[in-house]
Amino acid sequence: MIERILFPTDFSAGSEQAFDSALALANDFDAELHLLHAVVLHADDPNDPAHHFPDAEEIRERLEQTAERRMATGLEARSTDGLTVHRHQRRGISVAPVILEQAGAIDADLIVMSTHGRRGLENMLLGSVTEEVLRLAECPVLTVRSGKDTTAYPAAVPLLVPVDFSEHSRGALTLARELAARFGGSVQVLHVFERPIHPEIYLGGMPLDSPDFHTVETSLREALETFVGETPGPAVPSTLHVIEGRAVPGILEFAGENGTGLIVIATHGLTGLAHVLLGSVSEKIVRRAECPVLTARAFGKSLLR
Image (cartoon, rainbow, N blue to C red; front, side, top):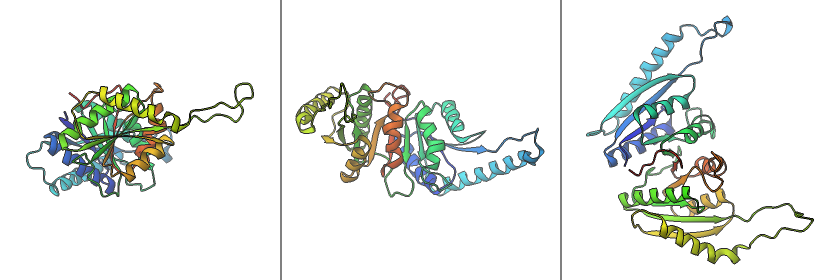
């Protein structure tokens, strides 16, 4: 299922925590672990001497030597017996393209990375790097929130799958079942009913009625049971839940109150437009979830092989 794991690192505290998750998964799946450090330095501007970076090549070489030592030190501090571990450094003008290029070069099955980096500003790494990787990576991405004491991979913990009845969420549910079966865990299947929000006056000056949750709750539960029953995957302990609210707060609140260890979510939903669900739901879940999030791109590479 997972043969090659890519772990990008900037040597931040958050990165170190994600390192432990990547290493644990590599051990569990007997997968190759590929460490990557992106060496990014502003390019020289030959037309503006004031912006010319002196000895840029020497600085790059020193950065690469330092990164090599830090990767080696990180491995020495951890048990890697029996694992195949590769260390990579790539140069580029920005970090995310370097990560994506390396993922393609090794045909990565999974990218494991922290949601925050060394700059320490809330959501900074997510906004500039992780978000771009989530949007463009062909393989699933496991994001680990820095500073949280968490297992950071689905070993014997409940996995939460938000479902919007799309085929993309069906794929996420199948993936969660496969992982739960492997690790002896269980699956929480959640649908959040959002009442449509309309202007006060609509359609010829008349209010537009929308269904009340209590009116549709029974039918939603039946639809969820049917959806889960028709979704392929191994039989694992599962619970089905239907709640009312806004999607992102509802998912996060449920996860916090029900001991969720990992959220498995697709990057596209019912909208069918590229990145729409990622921007409106999945991206916000990654930003705010206390537990790790496994994001599976609907049209990309699957862990199920």
